Image 1 (cartoon, helix red, strand yellow):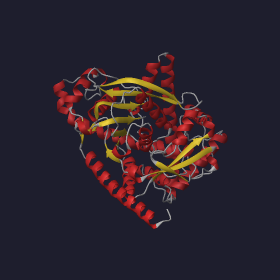
Image 2: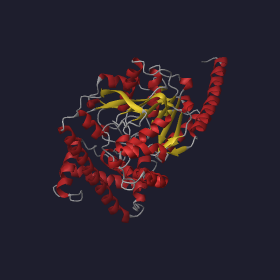
Image 3: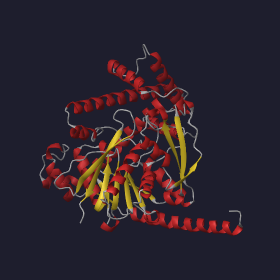
Image 4: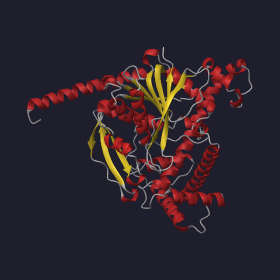
Length: 489
């Protein structure tokens, strides 16, 4: 490395890689400029016919001729309605930030037991405004509210505080003057009460499903649990461990007949903060696109020089984040991922091993950002994804319920990933999702998801098998990854 001619060769390699990255990025952008199109009525009609009893009111009970006339306008309106759910999801994200963020406060993160106490208060009082008999939990919450409002008023360069400020501004709350302080506090507490009530209702639904003693029905209930909830962007590492285990099982059973070249991820997610694995002492990051590339290379299912990955999402936050990352990659800037593990979470050895080796196919180790003491016992590591790997990712704006990329068979995807996505939609919308997936999936290609989907007779995509992966010693901490395949031939 000290010799001049070796330095020259390294510079030549960097130059060639840079040109290749630019060319690859341009080719990927050209591919995903294939227009996203709404699902045509001719393809939706069998779904409408088979699910007539559960259709939305403006479609239910109408003849095929009547449905075909209103279909285009209905789809456009429904697209707007689904995208509007992002705002409520943003509010949920701010609530998680209030409960678990540490960048704006010295107060501890609230744990499950404390949240149960708050939930009990909401059930009794109906809201979060009454602080009588507050106790330690309410003291922490009130201090967090004070600190978050103060931080949002003067966010500096904290990207999460700036996001919370935008959400409050959208609600007409301006913290540039003291008059906005009281409405901001009220908004945070009201939003928290709503989230706690919703969580309690989800728990009741799952408990009722468990009492049926039917594991299949319980999984079906879980798979559409959030159909009326705001669309959340939160993400975490462990579902990708379950995906790698599934891909390994599929490989070992020789179900994939050719190298994977084209991958799509529906809803790649953005790590903001949550009660399990999300923290806020490092920049926001997306994990799944890099995790999937890492896994298919590790498993020998793809070749690094012949791999393309497209993300499909309706969130401008996600799409802009990934667009900036790929633009930086053209300038030879990598993408840094902070990888954290809670020592007290009781991860299974296989999960720990996955965390330890994450990135070894696509990245190099770098110094991790130290975790503040308020975040508990965390083990941290970090990797920087190589620019040429980042350049293989292309974001596309797409509503999977109603849209698909208009791709010829030769450019369709070998593998589509969708974890914690279909759970936000009901059976009818999930069926539309599956039809759009089918239209983008090559023959013999796979969809991997942790949601169970209704398989209608008209569908060309059917479940092949599933794999249950347990993450830790905690109850119900794991995923069922279902393998759906488009019929070969």
